[in-house]
Length: 308
Image (cartoon, rainbow, N blue to C red):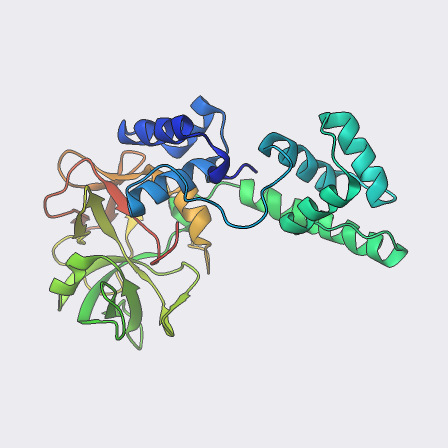
């Protein structure tokens, strides 16, 4: 996969421009012929740091161009070679890059795909390549909104996370025996206590300054403004938030990057501030739809602190 740090300033600016024109990750990636993960990295960097150009890289520069690195990565994962020298020779023939076996070995180590020449090493490499292929197939399987465990919850208490400036710790009732702890960087959340919110409850927990963040308070964000997505009046902690046409049992645990790529990019508020997935409202059946207080036509945020 390509890395966002290898893009030109023009390409990175084009990615951000397309995002501001309300194009999805998939549309931008197709239009610019880039991996969706690369597009996502550029957009996340722009949102967090307000810049599109990468910081100067430290350490030894790569001898290979990014397109040659992609060729090498595919060859290492998809083919079996009797030795590193054989792999290097085939790579030079296919790519036209004039590099040594030592350079190929260094690049593979940085990719986490170092080659071994012994019988034991080859067996381990084949198992690793098979595992990588299986993971790749799983990653390509799109996750839709039916995989999300979205619930109405009540933010019981909010406090600043000790030793931080801008991180907040919430205790949230989501209809379980004990409240969950949630760490958030949304500055607006510190104003809310004893209020209802929508929470995503099955992302893989993350550790933030030694505190486990066990759920995500779903927010709506636009140009530095943040609002909590609210369940409909009458909702109680633990009520399931669903989307018509995307019903099913939520996964036990989800990866935040997969959720952002396949679901987060399709979640927005409409002109009436109603949260939608592919145009279909988020709702608590029999009680109504979920809304932002004032932010219309804006993105809905589904990720932990520090996640993409």
